[in-house]
Length: 403
Image (cartoon, rainbow, N blue to C red; front, side, top):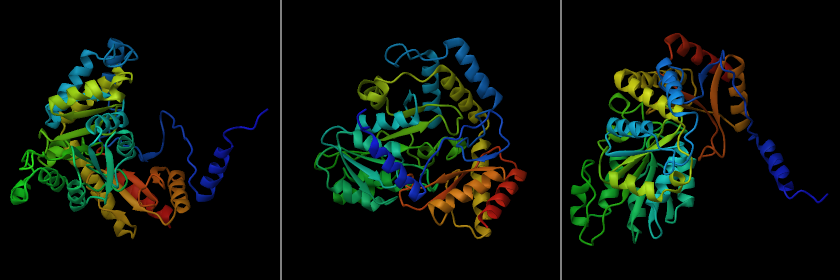
């Protein structure tokens, strides 16, 4: 037999083991005794009876799968209904549903950054945005995390169209991007210097300057903002006064606050039409399964009827942060529902998470290369349905496991 062409994989596996970076799958049972602070079910809707019934009803009506791409046979009336209600809820003109949030980000970045364009990407962006930048035909310039001045400097170098790409709430530490300042930087890029001071207002639309240049577009990944941030959970763009602006496009996932599966791009109608015709992860991918669309629509309607869920998720996150820091743990103040707690090393982060699990608490464990700064941490996700008793239990387990 010839030697395996994949022998290099074994050396990489040994290197991961030496660095304490081995990842393994851990299938969970349908009913677990663990208190879950690891998943992204921020509003506690994944098992809500109205949401699961929405999924079941859609599967009974439309079948188990979409049967094809959205442009062939994979678009149903249910998909169109979800898109209309999602766009209306978040304050945008139109929406386009895809099979995942990852696919939505790839679609938006690649379709909105053609050859000759500049993509300005935050250093803390999610992997899906990073991969979108790698696949796009434009040139990418990575700038310092949450730094509008760095964005301005990058935009000063452009010679063609430009788009600024950022998470709204960053998935590792749960900190929020400075959206009004980012929007101002994008709009100033098309404004003559004498007018620049007047272009800083977040609600102003991008316009052409004396040179004929227009401002840069702003593409926001609101995966961790939808359902948690803004009035009734309408998202970070809504909270910043940017929803519906002609120069702003937002992506969301249906798999976090809405407890389902899938993703969507929201923005001006002509931008969404462009994605239908140009975004490869939309054109060539099978449409979102009807059950996922039905569950997401049911969750969206629940959120509209129970807007207090968003405020509760934020309150639980703040309480977790305050109590953990009072115990001497190094945590990052949350701007949404993610609470990040620093660990000294990848190995110690793994041991800490394992002790929590043994004590009945599931937490996320983020290590390089998932973290851009190389600092390992436990990642906790607050949930709107977490009781005060469960909050007490989580804090006690985390502090005892750390000791």
